[in-house]
Length: 74
Image (cartoon, rainbow, N blue to C red; front, side):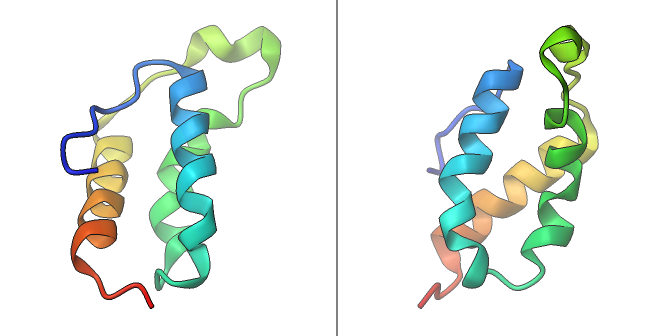
């Protein structure tokens, strides 16, 4: 998880969200942390070319990686 690269496509971002979603009940403030990721993944098929990974998404991504590798999840 620590070495996981940041998503570069809408598909990769959606896959990451799908994988971490199982942990939502174990991570406090999951929705708040995930909000920047949802902001760029809530695209329709016709707008997926608008995918932009910015500093807010990177911060959210890094925070999830930190929580999943250091926080006592259970």
